[in-house]
Length: 302
Image 1: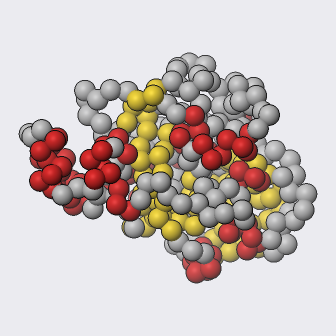
Image 2: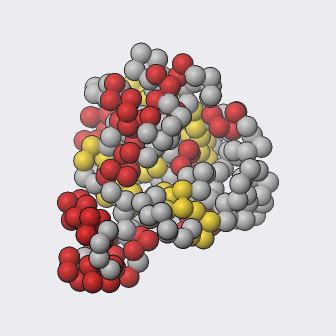
Image 3: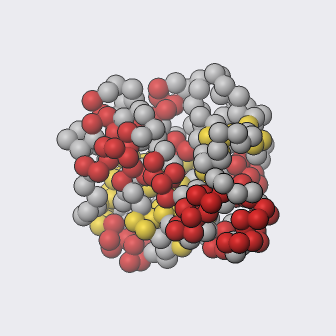
């Protein structure tokens, strides 16, 4: 591994949940400038309120997880039926140690870190999420990636008895995703197991999901049950549904619009009714990944 990633958003940016909610209530009636001092929030949070992490309620209440329905509130309403323990991940394909790995055993071998990442949906809404998890590269090293492997394929659980949304044909099930191996091994790429220090909620992809913060959110596949190393570009669910609208790479890029809407700006969830849209930043602001795409036409390989 070339290096370990370091947060530019730090633990000081995470407002304790109770304080966060209290502040939201007070801010409804007072000027923001006087509130920050009264509550003793971090200097960085005051100076950059757009980087303040969203609340647990916002993160868990406004979700896309079509296995539980296409409405933003459907996952919170219906994902409680998902059984998340015990949980096993099959790792196979071009690896030295294929097998069915218990997530509990995997976590004992991994370093769990807090990663505060910007999250950008292709629908042009955004959040800031304080994840907990481990680097995917460490898991790949545990399994032993064989020479010749070029891609990593992922698969979500498919449980019709627990996932009411899969009765719909809005997508082909199970949900699948993929990354190039160098993307998968980048220090930013996280296997998230928690949010705000709690176990990750079912509607957010419990018990373990991928987080690739420089790509649109649908690349960050939830409730992973299988990881396959391969030498061929794997199929992805949204690309299969509409390759013109959802490319394999799906990097956040204000210069490449979705065929049906602009990607030049985004709406911050929780910003309030009168909040202004914010300009979208290329790679969602994670410039350190730009070298992964040197020489590529990011409009063609969107």
